[in-house]
Image 1: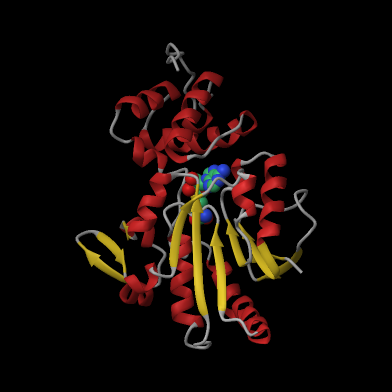
Image 2 (image 1 turned 180 degrees about the horizontal axis):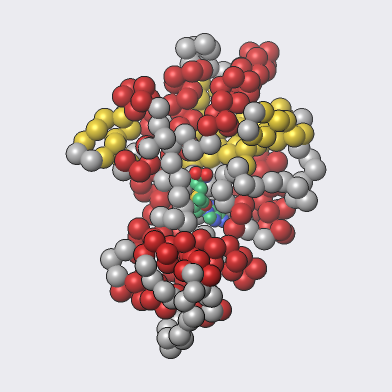
Length: 287
Ligand SMILES: C[S@@+](CC[C@H](N)C(=O)[O-])C[C@H]1O[C@@H](n2cnc3c(N)ncnc32)[C@H](O)[C@@H]1O
């Protein structure tokens, strides 16, 4: 796509720099190519809001300079990380609800059904921090109470780049910044400046490429007790959200639970779930 001739921007406050439609399309293409996240035309405000802050941090006074940096600079992969951002123990209230209420409820149900395996799907897993957090939580808090229980975690994402990191299980300090020390000490090996997950955690999780829009593939994802679909719906338009959430509903087993991101909601998207409130989080149950 040809680069637009530099258009002078008025530089009042960096967060208010206007993004031209052409600049929007160029940045969107970079992001889509590198991360799989597609900002539809109606989501320009979202990108403008995020990048306004980046311009400020990078001390750039217009988007053309930002685009030049993405095109010719060395920071492109660092910049892209802001769009598939994730970290271990990202939304603690969700993990507390799981540990204290939902997994014990699922354990009771499994016992009554004579089953042992719990299946969890991290459906926009990025580089695997969410999926691996679930595996650690299981090993640390659930397995000691329910030794008969087995866990299978599936992490999926549209981007092969992030899945490669997820499969390696090697992370930078940034990813583990919210990880409680006992977990860091027990489940990671520190090598140079990297944090390497131990095999005990990695073997509970597998990663696959999957586009949440791909109805055929989505239909093959079934019988999950818990699904995480966090911090990805925000990029989708209303119709896509309805389709994706309806498919996720079908992928859950009756009595299963869906988690979405802190800033996301199913209001106007689905009435199929029962909403359950926990301190500082909500969970959607398929009854
Ligand atoms: C911000 S990250 C969220 C990671 C993690 N769920 C969390 O909350 O920490 C969003 C992820 O969604 C993925 N993604 C975007 N569009 C997708 C799609 N249509 N299907 C599957 N994954 C998608 C991106 O590649 C990115 O890794």
